[in-house]
Image 1 (cartoon, helix red, strand yellow):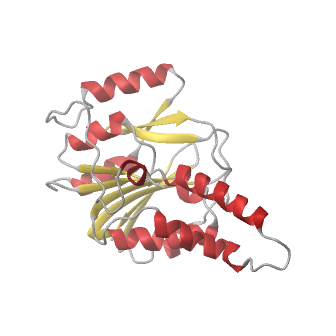
Image 2 (spheres, rainbow, N blue to C red; image 1 turned 120 degrees about the horizontal axis):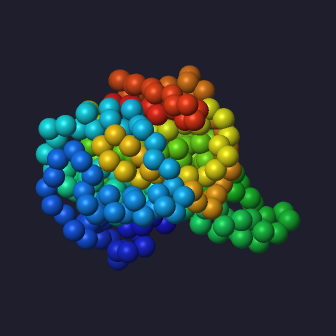
Length: 245
């Protein structure tokens, strides 16, 4: 269940996240974002130069009152960064929600008796059930999405269905920034905005191990409806890929 599903009553439309303090600013990180990032860098996080982020933001220049979906945790610095630039920001931590969903599914599976129908417990069926109750927004609702590296950690049937679902939620001309590992990382990270050219990598307890390292052709097939892509490979073997619908 997503962040907004947990904080709204049934039937309510999700509301964008609002920072505790907002002011209009230029490209530099706000004092709130800088203070938050500085504190967490002391706590062991790293700052990573991101060509993908720079390209992502370049594609959003001039967009007024844009709507952005962040598929990671809620971070104050990320909220402030985009709201100061006139965006409505929504957050849906898909990895956390998938973890909670699988915990319930495992309990259901253990409760099935020999001879009972277990056809609904296939990976494909689980993916369909998950998307019926998670990442629920109107079609063509978003101008931009931050997918981060979550597709590396999800079951393949869910990866395919999730990308199809997200494609429906993105408006024509909408921009996606996604990341893919070329090899298994030593540390599980979460990501947040540090400034207009850098991401902060926050070490976190691993929710999953990597399920697959997707090859270029597999990535292109997943995002086939998108007309433009750019890819950047860092020294840490993390690929940043930009897609434009």
